[in-house]
Image 1 (tube, rainbow, N blue to C red):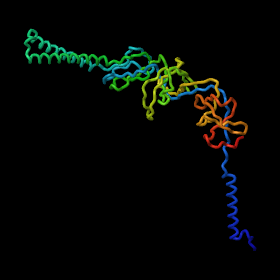
Image 2 (image 1 turned 30 degrees about the horizontal axis):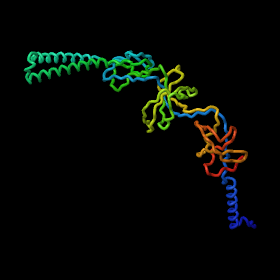
Image 3 (image 1 turned 90 degrees about the vertical axis):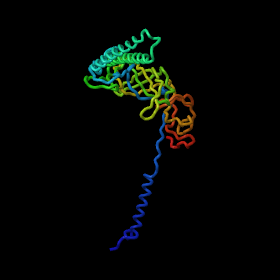
Image 4 (image 1 turned 90 degrees about the horizontal axis):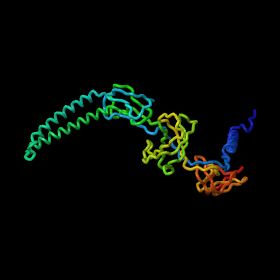
Length: 349
């Protein structure tokens, strides 16, 4: 039987190699050629625009006080719990004063003793002030100094009695409180936190680079994470004149925004985001920021032709930029245009 020439060993290898070359050429033609990305355009339009400075922050009241004892001791009683309303001057908590009473009695006893000794030393030289000996002077002075120290000790013991009671200095709502008596507390332990809810604020930390654009009275829009679909409004009420450093190492300035809706139910510490409106314009020409090049020019489309057009930008929002001069409403500009000096695309449709 005769073998076809194409299946003979030498010619078979040539045939397979030819097939591989054809497949490679075909694959390159269909898959290797770079597909051009379609150009994207946007129209120049009129709209309101706002320049903003944004940050996160927390909801808080007009004032917040953290109440602590000035000395350690056993908690005798706590009169409040979280959520209670309190008034200025109300007793919040107190320490066990048994040991304080003993210390006060001892201080008073010591004072009486030192007073008697000082009186005796003074009587000894009562009619001999002109010829008081040096030894008598030392005795009298020592006795008088001891009496004065004992008097100061009594005052300190009385002050300890006063400090054993915590009194709220403001009207407000208790947001934190120790409710279990009998435990030992120190000077660092928070006994109660009271927030003055007569006004509601949002405290935001603004990066120092943006601080210069913030001024009192500026309007602000904010949302709370707990109510993402509700937009609240307010004004910049106070700028704290002190920088602080965040955990990321950035220097920030705290800006306090007073909410316009003072009927909001305050939950102290709720987090959210705020946008402070530094500038705003109504019904002005705008384009997407993606269309503006570094040299303040755009790539304008007219029919199937692209050309470079200089413009005068104004204020910018997060997404758009105002155009004061150089464009008209309805004109079309190229998004993400090539850098200034680069060749313009030709695949215009």
